Amino acid sequence: MSLKCGIVGLPNVGKSTLFNCISSGKAQSANFPFCTIEPNLGSTNVPDKRLEVLSEICKPQRSIPATVDIVDIAGLVKGASHGEGLGNQFLANIRECDAILHVLRCFEDGNVVHLDGSVDPVRDKEVVDTELQIKDLETVEARLAKTEKAGKAGDKEAAKLAALLNRYKEALQQGRSCRSVVLNNEEEQALARDLFLLTNKPVLYVCNVDDASAVNGNAYVDAVREAVKDENAEILIISARTESEIAEMEEYEDRQMFLEEMGLEESGVVRLIQSAYHLLGLQTFFTAGSDECRAWTIHKGDKAPKAAGVIHTDFEKGFIRAEVIKYEDFINLKTEAACRAAGKMGIEGKDYVVQDGDIMHFLFNV
Image 1 (cartoon, helix red, strand yellow):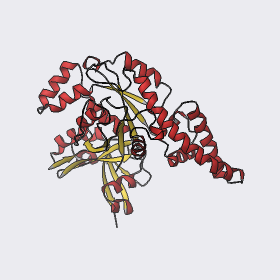
Image 2 (cartoon, one colour; image 1 turned 30 degrees about the vertical axis):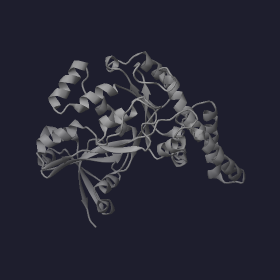
Image 3 (spheres, helix red, strand yellow; image 1 turned 180 degrees about the horizontal axis):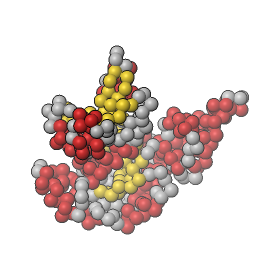
Image 4 (cartoon, rainbow, N blue to C red; image 1 turned 90 degrees about the horizontal axis):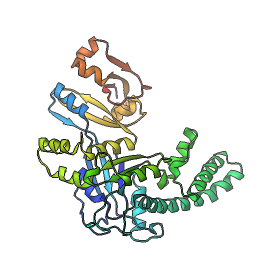
């Protein structure tokens, strides 16, 4: 499933450092603007303790985790919507992503230059937001000119789209992102998806802090939290410098000891990858056996045939039924046979909505 999260933000906020920590790719990291010119793409495993537990029970020949694609995109500057800096390229790259990880600098460090000479994550956020909003406003106004004309001529679908575009236009002119506009029904949600607006993409604000603020944040994080309270967005606190130190440790025990000393239960990178996965609207089902334990990625709300098709297209075409065991039941009873005997295996048809963590076996005929 090819879905991507784009890491965006101003130059020198820690984007490439984070990318290096979470990705199998290695982006250059340096103390000057536009260090990243071409977008770097990396695919990384999604940490999931459930897969580890299943593998301990089944002892398979191999275990395969879910993955998520992360893109490190060039830093943006004021005027990008009009081509300043690497603006056109930045906007094209972000349009190709399905969700945004917006990195904000929330730390003081005289050795790391800031493009505007001072640290202010809310101002930085507004710079990026404004450039994306300007581009979206151009898109909305261009579509609106066509759809309003068609709507007035009696095209009911065009009239519905025009009404939504006018709401987006009003929000953008007020300096609000499109994601702040409440969609009233599934029809409007479908119309919104087809517009591919930059500020309608789901966003996670990643507050890059110093080591001392990695647990509880700081005043900069508080300011960001206040600034985004009316958005449909989440915040994650992370210290890129700390994460880079963790990434260099080869032994698992050393990494855990380091985290404990920092007062952290798990690394920020683990939380970031998991957040990116869920930001894309994804969830996991499992197949488990002696040959292989595997985490499969589907969209939230997908039904059983769609899940079967992720394994193989023939499974979806010839879908008959799915045998489903809940994760908790499997780890308690240990085997498929025991679950079946205890009445804990469900037989589900085409309308079954797959739940996160389901352990599934598909029956099909082609």
